[in-house]
Image 1: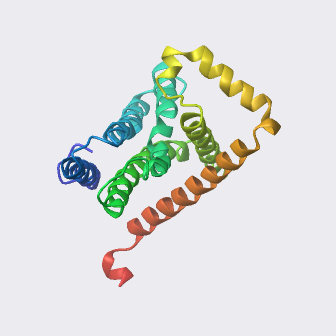
Image 2: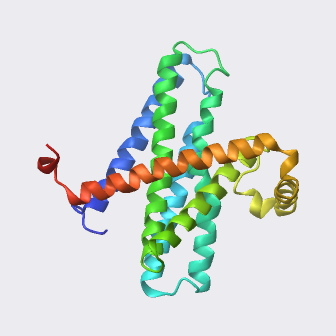
Length: 228
């Protein structure tokens, strides 16, 4: 990871470039429209980096300590809490027509840049944690764990968008957050739309992640010459 020419370093640099492109698109839109509308996009992208940084830290910890250690457990919990922030950006498409702008097609490109980068950041952190699972569990067990994680993320998307909770509320308002979560889980039949949304996002995230996972596997096995 530390070598400047390593694949991992190059990949992180590519993520940094993608982040820079998103911010540049936003900066141009802000100047062109003389408005700071959609200012939550840069902040949401910053939050999308958090689970990746935590996953990197977890990987370092697990080289020296057991996953059952308090440091690894606490880091894992923090990662799981912040992971939905990366995928939450998908729901930002809902704001595309909130503000009158010069060119909605440009805004669509800008939103896509932010959302794509955010989702890739989230999946990259998931790949790092998945790799740690594979060292310890069977393939089927790993699949179940990853599915449950993405199910939890999808539920996080719902309570974030519909109920306006965020990751920080675990520290600042844990009682209110716990009440809303337990209320909906205890009365699932009263929230049919929630079930549809959570399942839809779970299926979406799982299918996207599987494509990324198997695509990365193909990239490792074949060179560009082999593909051609």
